Length: 275
Image (cartoon, rainbow, N blue to C red; front, side, top):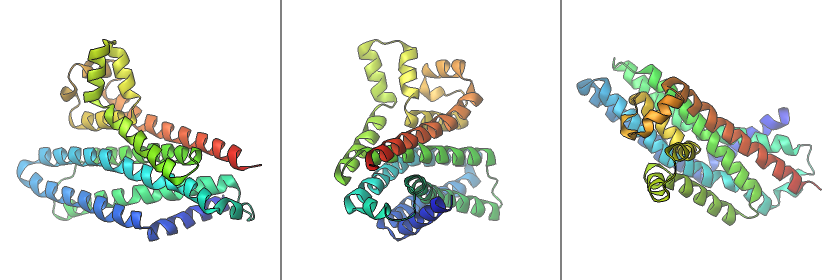
């Protein structure tokens, strides 16, 4: 455990000095903070609807930006260390491969999640200071959704990084993964369903296997419990899960998917790099 936390601390220090973290914090966190500030100002006129609508906008922005940031920056970790010859040096130190792998994953997770969470917290503090009521339930659930989304794509990125033999291949695979998940949202999936004339249940099952779709639908369910914007698909989702169980599913499924991918990545990494 001590080796793992020391590795996590080392990865945190490296991330704080990295250019990608400065861009991630400055652009993404700064933009999110501005969106919240504008929403809070608007909510004083329009009430909670204005703030809730901005929360949905923020979640959609997070869904589009956070996964690609996580994938592109994380896949360089294992693949980059392999190219730099870090593993040969690592084997000469009293640090196990498991401590190195999981420590790097924990450190990277903190560096991914904390800037987004701190931006949200700063917006809430400003709201409290201005005596603007904050929808705490929505804030808490959206925070949990972001934590689940970060865990999901971090695990996928670690799996890609463990498989790829070069940084270029890892980055290309990460971008293709993000692109495929992005394409299989409502519009593309609807076109496939219409052309192939597959059952609605099958199409919904394919859609809900996509963590981006699960994340998006769960975010909408908090703002629109009846999921009116999804049309007929909402009836199947609500009849199968129910609103509250589906919101819990949206937290557990991406998290378990990320942990499973990270575990598979560690197994492949250990089997491929140990003699």
